[in-house]
Image (cartoon, rainbow, N blue to C red; front, side, top):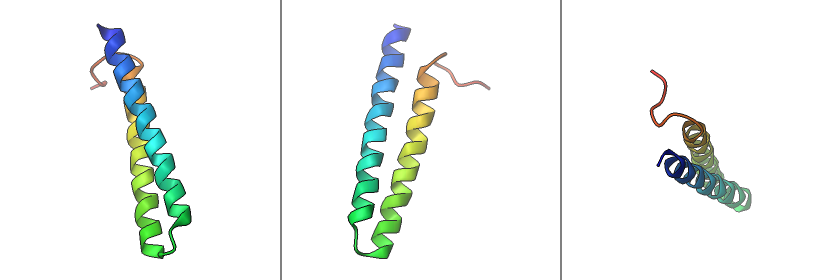
Length: 65
């Protein structure tokens, strides 16, 4: 049971990283500076969330208190 939860969060983290990469690429192509900034910030947030997801998936289900 715990293995499937870790696997799920790992897959979710991977999907988030892929989406963050797509956003970074979109930001590089954006011609509007405000749009580029918005996309870069969104990519950074997703990258951060994916790192949290993957670190939580590696051990206990509950985060440390």
